[in-house]
Image 1 (cartoon, rainbow, N blue to C red):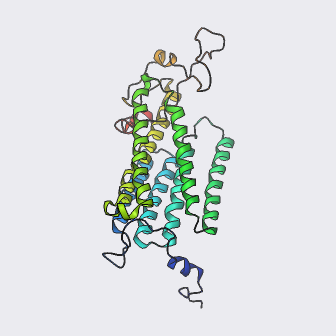
Image 2 (image 1 turned 30 degrees about the vertical axis):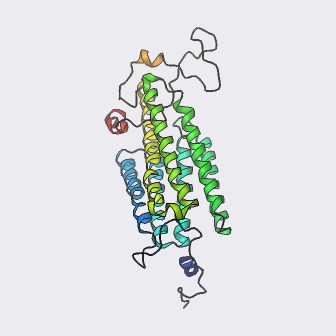
Length: 308
């Protein structure tokens, strides 16, 4: 029988391989079993947020994409916790691969609509899966290639924010556009603060170690995924509600517009000139903008009975 704990075991070697990155906190200072206690503990809010999203996805019957977002975020928190707890390469892979997977899922969720064909959904899903697999293979082959992870994750964040902005800027005030644009600003500010915490901690450890900035990065970093998950869920409800009733809804206040008010709202493509309602090029059936961004007082809770 093969001894799985022998030095010749590839699994054993992976379990014992140190991580290629060591963040700015004294290692094993208080215990031989806990490498970075504050960085590990500050990862738990992500675990709780992921579990919360899984629970709401199931209770509100939001669908697979929201369940996937919750599971991915749960694994991000668990991976970060194990990574900082042990400083082993296996924890590092779980942490960073989960972040990339979560980024891909959030990005794709902004582009999944009920009206899309299964062929289109399968296409963009295949692109997302390919992106994750290419990242994982590359990362395992080049273990010192930490900058590749940073570039991959930043790319996902930027493209997701861009997709969100293209939507939120076209939402009329009647549907909560002014408030939604303010929420978008909150997401950007939270992301900027998280970056401000992460960069000095990574580059100037000797000067910033006593401030434990990486732990603050973990905590502030829970805000953008929470807001975006809420926003995407609100978008799903608003789309299905209009499809079912022919009436638009303000996802911030919960006010349902009349059919006459709904028909007065015209969606203008971001790259086109505003449409003249009396002109020949206008659609006889006006469309309402997709509401990708909303926080409110967690509007989809209030909308549960109304939309189901």
